[in-house]
Image (tube, rainbow over all chains, first blue to last red; front, side, top):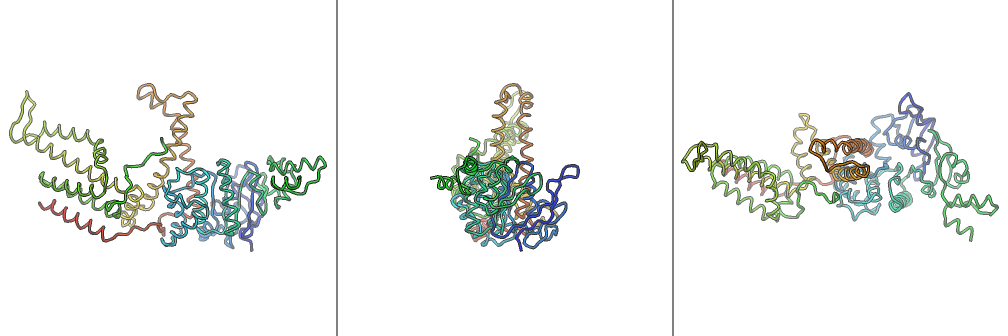
Length: 271
Length: 263
């Protein structure tokens, strides 16, 4: 059975306005790396909040690890299974020291103190922030804060991490740090990643891409399948990675290029 | 400049005093201060002062830091002294000029009260100088623990204090940024009288408050998604542990307090 399943999910913030989500059907398997892309107001953040019970669907149901999000007794268990990292790195750190912040989740779960110690150390090591454990968060860079936020989720030992535009407020360096970290967690620790973004470059390494538009799913497919239809993506106001667009233009001019995703692949196929 | 702000007056250190359990330190402070009010001779104050000197020595706090901590109470000290000297009557007449007179009782009570205030402030500042805000919060949470039963939200209060401490630097930074942005648009924060200056702060305060509310909203979501559900069933990374050292400190201060109260 899939780790996360959405069946016929509708959601609206209030009855007067158009629904934020319409008839979403999606299932995500354990260990997958799924990117969700879409323009502003396409419903991608709303979708994320449904996955760890920050919101409940107006119709349909969300099942996480066999548990329905409508049952209140499941909420803590679901939030432990599906961790969430938000966009603004400043607004999700709670404590005055990195170490204490990472411990926040496990503390809430009532885990005994020696075990918390172990988890905090492991989590900080996994995101490469172990050197900073005594720092106050406000002395860290954006990318570092975001990695601390990720460590705070890992310390709860989740099966899945949902990242809601984690790189939107970061500089290119911080963006790279965060992307490397989540790919590492997916490959080495087997954590399912649901990565919401509007940077198309960041979706290249995903197993599947979900394209959202106006509250519904437009397409689902591998990066190769999705990027093949460049014109459709552009119609939705999304930018495709430079290498993909380049290859697309060259193909139009009659140059034969296989399906590629990155600059390196493009270089290899041309030279 | 704003980035390096330290909160409170905590001086990090690794002395015996620093390492005492914060709960014990709070209890000892309350006890000693109560005892201070029972002292009725300068000899008692001398003994108390000796205790302060020993603690300062053990904690390796530079004495100048403690003296600096007295600055805010200077006005109160002077006021107390003047009021007592001129208005407390009794004993021998020392000086007279028209209807103003100084009598020995006034002089004595004046200095007596001033010593008491100074010792009070010095002793409490020993607590805040050697205990980090975080430890203080933890200590207060544990000490308020028994009151949970009558509905005092001790853990929630402690959480609020922690969050406040966490966001002070963030909000200061933001205030700085907004101030610069408004100055670039021609706002004036530096000239005019007090009323005008206060009114000029509006373009700073309104955006700051809006942003603080937005942050609070975000933070609440983030905390909820990290399974926060109040203080119930929460464990801690660092559990406070009371050791032999703490009991020795408590024992000593009980003996000292009893001496003050009885004599």
